[in-house]
Image (cartoon, rainbow, N blue to C red):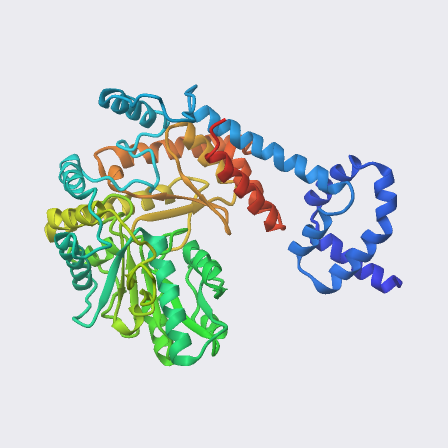
Length: 540
């Protein structure tokens, strides 16, 4: 290399590897036998020269970890992190062994129920007293009793054959139609129940991909959404071979700018996606503006209300003024909403709605030539339990408008209380302008995951989010019980004060999560994630 090239190359390496990372790199290199370093030096320089001119930071680290001697060190560090995760999972079992084969004789009802109760007690966080952020949306016990009884009556029915259980089919159609009315749809709207928000979003991408191919001849499709959109869209695009184009949101409002969305859209875009609200920060995207853009460019526009849909539709009646984010907005062509969140049905229940049947026809799967007969399926599943249909139907009818409005008002009141309380704690800062059920916060003084670590010791399991590093509290019915929000805010204040006084290093799973954000080679994070999932299913 010339002196100029060498200078540029050095600058590149220094930009690529900040001081902290260079120190880590030096520590790794010190462990590598010199023979490997000598043998690999020339090749390594050539590789880095090529990377400097052609590839990304992630690609640089991916290539670097393959160099002689480095691979073993990287694997050693990964194994260390994985061991810590496994130890954490093992401690959760509190000494209980795993069942690995069927017993010779079946267990009695008494033994089964006792074991289930003991297994449910393994968790360290009390759902009833608000220890969990999100996760469980369990309503009052009297509602739970009605809904679970309804479930048990139809647990062994199967909506796959509509002739076998016409009553279950009627209930499912009624659930969809009630949802259509709540989101201000008309008689032309169509929809189905699904197994959850992820399936609703998978089906949305599937439908718009099929529609775009048939009507516009698009064979290399892409989908455009803000980078705060739900990860199920990543999964859907991965599964259905659709390019996902993420538009970075504003770093202060956490909302996308319309001009940037416009730039990402081209002739192969099949749809635009907005969230109401998004999961990381609880912020509502500018739905009306995005719908206007979609109309102008002749694109379908999906509003992902899986998280808060069954809050937003009751907000006005509960006394809260939110801008419309439903079918009243001209340009909205589909909406997803989870009935198993603030619809208070058991998990496994969501709804996908389309403004016109022309879209949903590309969601359906129909095979007229199967040897087993003509096969039609409205969603990804074939057989399903009618229990979840009946439970959702029962939850909606048992609440009624008045019940949902009361529940929504309670969630909104606690959300505002949490927002004001967190903002008043020295060292913490609220992200954006959250209005519905999630309040995210970070700190300019210390690593906020340290607060999550401390809160865990106090019985609160906060959610850790990234880009930017933050925590959030996801308000659910248990947080609306008397005294819970006050206790949470008091504990959060005390934990934050301890961290400010002694900002020590991260520990436990928060440390692994914090480390994962800083690794440029995301394949390493994926590898760690896959091994973590393996550990969840391990019975050793």
